[in-house]
Image (cartoon, rainbow, N blue to C red; front, side, top):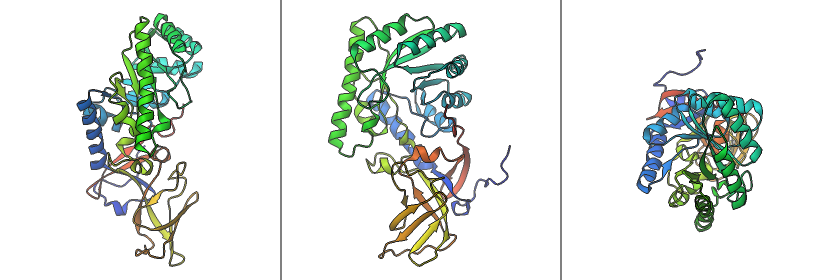
Length: 366
């Protein structure tokens, strides 16, 4: 159904209804190109994570730039990608339960899927379902490299699961993966580098151990936006999984300046009840605060946020006093969870709306 309230291309950004999730198209496209160029120069493949942008639109741009495929967190995210013509997908979460596995099998019939595993029962269930469905499903053994979430801990556990997957009809043992997500926001570059190298060395050691025991490892997948240039230079790592680099957010922009800010939320000043208070129409329902309060661009002062409103108590030395109706851009600290609250991106180029882009993966949690 066409939304008759959507603005037309060419609309000035200041005339968009708010809150609106803006994407600076020049910046996002430059980020895609820069990361891919780095991968090409350093001989590592790029398998970007779609959990950030939740959209085949952006995934296709990454593929055209040279990505070998995309990552997804959920079966539903993978379905969106495959529906959008992206057929090489790594699901980086364990897929548990008959309903999800049945959906996975249906999707695997029209794509090349790889899925993370870390238990014998799950491998057996996937193998039985794959045989029943007549498909060949790739699996990666997930290794715990310090995040202490999913993943096996020992060489022997990995070997046992890898042998099981290799012997299981319907499955294809492709290798290992490990996500050092606990390091992505470590501000001390030396600490982040040291610990990321340790995590990559762990994967390298396991890959060599499996190879020595007669199990060739084709894929060693790891890394994210905060460690792409550390993990990605390990000679055993075959591909990296950065997600947030495409848009960046306040958290990553506080880490380094390797990529440009491309994502903001446009809000409107709806009230100025006293001279030093500015109230805007973007609250927690449109801007996430799970990693901290957003940065209100151009305003100095203390930020407060409720469900529907954001308030800035202006600093005494603030030289800007916005008026009711003024539009202001806000930088979220966490882009992924902010994007998940919106139905569409407003792609901006040169101050004008170029395209309204559906966030087709919004609400895809299963």
